[in-house]
Image 1: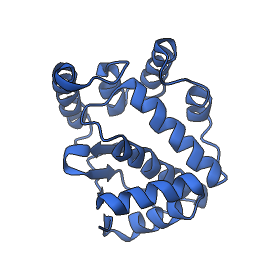
Image 2 (image 1 turned 90 degrees about the vertical axis):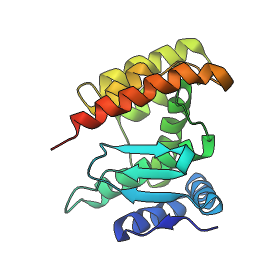
Image 3 (image 1 turned 30 degrees about the vertical axis):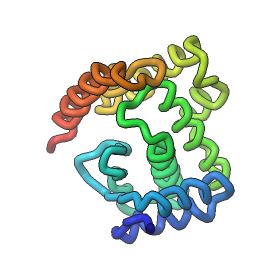
Image 4 (image 1 turned 135 degrees about the vertical axis):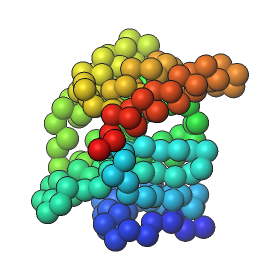
Length: 185
């Protein structure tokens, strides 16, 4: 299969990620293997992955973005590609730690510093409940007032599986709907 990326800016981001380094190449290869669709949407703040339809949505890059800003946008694609790799339909703080660590790794490969994100997530162990709590606080603080904070606030710490994922999945769905109302013009 081939990744389904039609917008020129997103195609350029995909190629930049693929050429960034080992982790970027792995994520690009995964998106190709899975035939993942990636789209730009002004209705999204940051990025959003829907694993059940194998699709990534990214906010549009800033008009006249600098090279550094473009590379930051590329790391957002890497973050969402990590969620595709995880294959979970319901998210968790545990999976967000892994995705943010991946984003920081690709940022290093692109020779940029993500500052606050790097400081908040780089040294956390996603398997430790104490680190999951630290990450939950960081996510709701860093994104305070943004639609993402609404979603992050409802996520379970550890990854739910099987029937245990039903309630967290419903909570996340309603949080996404609330967050979507925040991004309406």
